[in-house]
Length: 258
Image 1: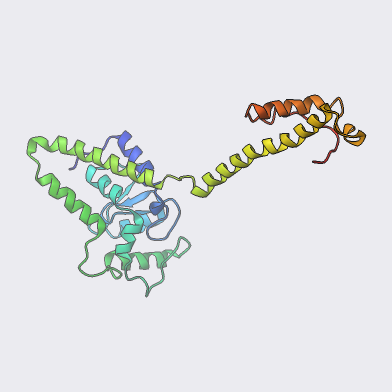
Image 2: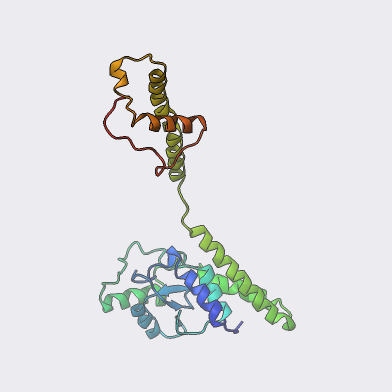
């Protein structure tokens, strides 16, 4: 279980894990885009809070960088399955009586809050196990059941499993077009389809009456030699059940009513 991940898999996994909305803010001070981790506690934290965690010592919290350090399968597995929101639901379950710090809080307030949260465990429900520890216990139990000769196979199996889990989480969080957007597009296309037949029908009636000499002089004046060929073109397109693009629609000059 102490086998370290290669640089390619480590970078790929962290690119996904850091992009999850649940990991967007530091678990302690809510600073944006944390890139340090307490592997013991299973939380992503900012650079400022990472210094405070180090002051508590490794028995309480072990801090690593997502970019500068090498990671074991167990450490990466915990971060792939646990996020800041889930971890804080455990570490801050009884936080209502206290004020949560933010990234503008003083170093003294940040230290005071973090100590109460992780060292004194003041906000934790007694008897509960942390999400990070649950994952470690499950992984260790699976590992102990393996034969000595199958340890490398177990490592590859769990790495593949972790990659699949992270991929599924990415797909679940990928933005999708809303149903309203799709229906709006359909309505727009429908209106576009209905517009041309109505438009051409009115002008085809004018040409029919012009050609049959059933209109008076005032109507004759509406259909000029310049306009008539373009009206015929629209009528012809209508009978072929085709909708021309805007670049092929004939242009009309002048003002007329229909």
